[in-house]
Amino acid sequence: MTLQEIIKGLNLEVITGGDNLNLEVKDGYTSDLLSDVMANAQPACLWITLQTHVNIVAVAKLKDLAGIIIVNGRQPDKETRQKAQEENLPLLLSKETAFQVSGRLYQLLGKGK
Image (tube, rainbow, N blue to C red; front, side):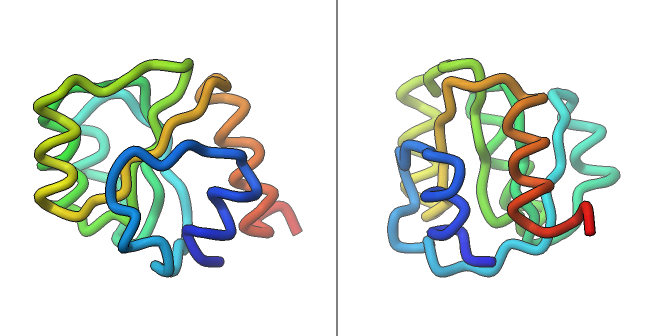
């Protein structure tokens, strides 16, 4: 499923990386610990987190993630937005909780079948 289809399906707001919305998303990973994401997230997955600081961009690029969904209506700071834009990394926002977004993404990707 493409990132654009997921954005529509989850009603996400695109903050940065609008040029990369045709990326294929293979899975999702939900965590707020950067070390956990570095150890366990797989390439081409969407990272769901409430973290908003600039280090999330570095981790996402290191792991070749499809993008980051920031939950709970949180907003990334200016430095995070700027770095994500430089890296052309999709930063997406949701007002829903990590639990809600994770469940909906799981269903969209057909993982429950």
